[in-house]
Image 1: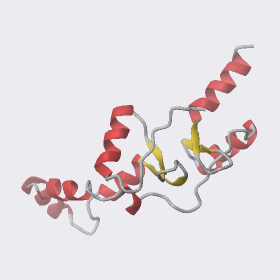
Image 2: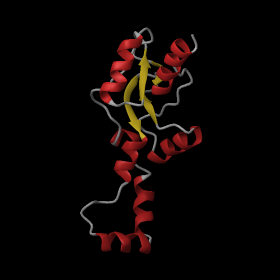
Image 3: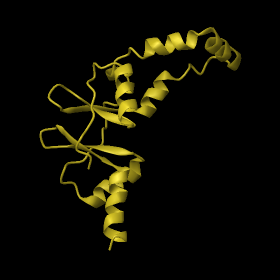
Image 4: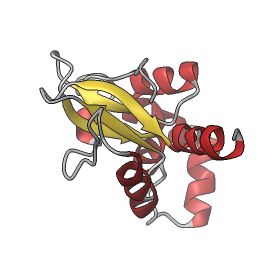
Length: 145
């Protein structure tokens, strides 16, 4: 489990989020309130889907928008959007710090998640469990024998 968890507040902008993701080379973060309670989750995929050009524009229109610089203006405006507008708020899958290994594997594989927030009994984020953590644990136990 990763104990040094980067988080964002729902009032942070998408631009703030991108700085955190890029600076720390991570693909997503839990969204927490001022008391570090988990209230959402947001990933780089959520951001890309939000920033992507409107699919109703034809290819010729898209080329025009990009060449004319309008696309950059749209991106600049969208980067000011608050995280709360696009974060996942419902059905957030999480694990407790004492979750058993098999359950964590099942959750990550079933939902195709890359990371899971680890939340204590008070609802506070205390870590993040990643696919890499699971693989490293398996490798250390099975291959390191």
